[in-house]
Length: 117
Image (cartoon, rainbow, N blue to C red; front, side, top):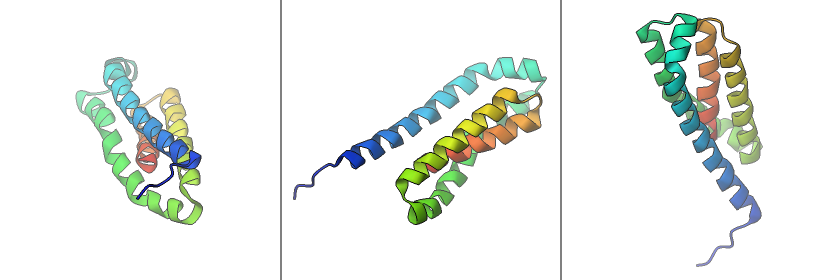
């Protein structure tokens, strides 16, 4: 059986791959920048560890709930929701002046990453 690979299939596969790149990029950046963030915001070692490790935790919830948007609106809208959540989270983290706001941004980034996977 031979199936034709459509343009849409290729685009969706590329979006999924790009989302995986977002996950890897964010883990790499937050791991390396963790020391600077810790110094700048006065975080404890535990807070830094929670910041770095929480991305995977929140990704679980993003992936768990993504099927509702996919089923109702389609995969294209699902990727858009994932991208918006990721960008909002990055903006919140960049503007954070304390641990709480930093973690709120991390929640959005994690949900966005999980949503797109």
